[in-house]
Length: 538
Picture (cartoon, rainbow, N blue to C red):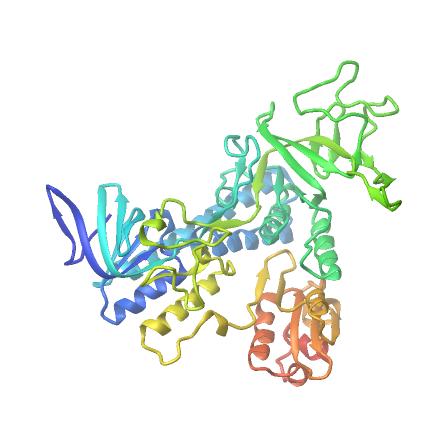
């Protein structure tokens, strides 16, 4: 910890005490940008960060940038054929981790000094908790530091959500995305619990490195919020990479495996086998039945109806029986138990606002039902002069939203006649960095239909884009939703190389209320992926 401000007081009999204009809890994108702006305006600022490994926030340390560094390294390994043998795979993975650590270390250092070297900013490393409406105590390695601030900004981000599965917190080899991105050795087999976009990014990445990847999905529909044709194309791409999926899969327990890996007891609805066994049970009179189930190993020992222990799970029809009113009533679907063994498990079941230990009640800051800090359209909490920025306030979990949250807050602090609000935010785009990136903005067809809108669907195969052919990346599709009578762009879904760049052009057109004909007739450079918008919106 370094306290280098005239407001710092330290005596043998008292803890250091700081009085400051602004306290920012958390070194994330919104908070660090606000700190620099306040400092430039002559305000005294304290930034409290729980860990020296997190200077700069989630994105540069354990989120966007390290994951994209690894994804690019994995793509290079696939293109070069470095994922073809155990020796080359290990070398490629080792080099990728080394490069990822170099990038994050460099960015972390730059972010720290960008704030700590300013005279008006004090960076304190330690966990902060409220002791009153305008007072916070920061637990540092050297002892507690008391901070009193006129204005306080909560910017603590989010943390991985860990489901309540026996053994998930205590079994070696079970990781969140943070731990999986910092392994020294590449897992040969990986099971991912959760098939959201974070899980799919890791599935694609590790498949490119040469890992055998299995994704366990709790329900039967893949990417249920996306259009069926888009979801099918994404799934086909992942399966072409070697990723395997097990649907309706509910992980019941996790424990160490005999070979030093991880063992998962998984129940799969809609599948039957002769008998379901716990992972550690072996019925008498049967041998060990081994099979490859979606890329993992089924070591459950069961007896099939035919008496053949190697006759494994088959799909079971849902049984029906009449109800009291004579209508058919569906019984619970059959369920089979599998014991999957793997080298590593990624828990990718979402992220939750990071409020643990903040003692928000001491300041009068309330939470929503989903556990986020409750804020209004100006990001003000339920306590006066306390704001919440970024993932902790329950908004979209993107670094660029945290940055936009800074704009919302600064518009108030700078005395704007009409402050910018969350409601002014338009058309938030998103990108998922799969082998073929998927990006979207606005409504998809499913949402437009549910909203009762009159629309037309525009489609274009990426194989029809000359630049995609030149890049030898012709996989994917482009899809747009346009209001029929007005030509208004309602949304776009781009499963395409460089979609993460092109989607910003569509967003800009939507923000400016430009009709689809604007993109149809725009003059683009050639050859580019962006010029595909001419044909997509034709």
